[in-house]
Length: 274
Length: 264
Image 1 (spheres, rainbow over the protein chains, first blue to last red):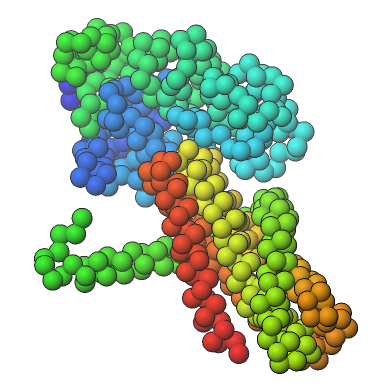
Image 2: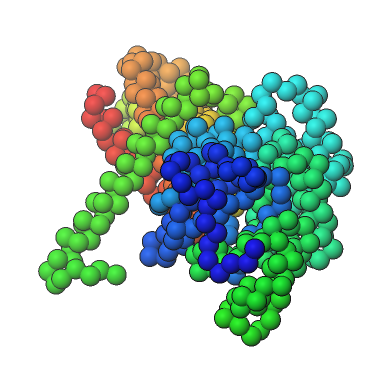
């Protein structure tokens, strides 16, 4: 599907909750932003933004800098609230939930932050955080086993006692990725997972994201400025420009798009509106 | 930049400052409310591991600097008074004078200011750095309440630590005072203790500890508040630390004045 306008919600009928009951034949939405508006002071970030991300897929959110890609992730995680509109995540409307009530939704989410947001504790403790906080009933031995298994998956076996300050940029990303996925979240948000990394390390990170999503059949939402890289793992692409979604479709459709701004951004050409 | 009409510049500045002060006080009150909620058992209560970590980091590691400052302060206090003690033959009052001033005023005030500069500033910088590096958002994304996990253990640790440090500081300051009194004024240990114990009341010590409690609570709340509301990346961290230290120092003097007035 190639569009120049935001995607309309699948069922614009009377139900107040667009994510609550998908129409027959329409895949369940992991994320549904409906008529979302948001401004930072005089800067209007979104105006009536609609975005629907189906469950069980890898979604790439692309676009030029400062168009609201990371802000979208924060809206999905409940770290920010819209000025107007509705945010539905994993079947629940979250924009009107209290911080405490949001906790139950966040327990089913994982998030990798742009600069990793690793805490000043050992690598093992960083990865164990979601398990200690969310699954309070787990034994110490189980937690250690799951941490070791997860670190091995991201090629950091034996790094449990290292401090984040001792790690390279790529290793920090992998620790962040391990932490985001250790609790087998249904929805994992990745904010610029390859920022500042070399192409080989970037591809390894993308492969990990894809592999994790396939293994758990979770939903992954990846914000990335590395368009070529992220398109290699995405099932679905949404491009943001000037406060709205100007394209949604498959990676192949994105590459074939004749919409000037999409074509220029995806192919990295100098001629165009950007 | 002021946009007030001529003649209204001063009222405009005063108005802005008043609003900023009220905003800060309102923010502190909201943080205190959130702390109360986070402390309830159904909300998870106090994280004891974090509490012990902060008690060690903020308390034990502060002992050397507090002890050194207190020892010199006690000595200097007697050094300053020595000429007058000799002039008026008041050696019997040296112990009482040193203990009374240390317990009631000098101990809590001086240690409060040092604690603010060392622990309060560090606390603000740490929290502010966690905010700008998205660690606080990271906690929230992990369904962890930052007030419960970050603020509550720090406030409890800083308040308890402040009281403990004032007790340690008082003792060391008196040792310093005794040492100088012995060397300069030839006041014996027995004379010093007798002078203090015969005139001093338990209340004099308690007043100082109540002040320490108030200062500790004020410094902890203020430093956490400024740390968590930082804006603007690394430069913002510096501004937050500066604002926190200044606000806490001002708060210490106001609380000291009021508590001295209310606790005779």
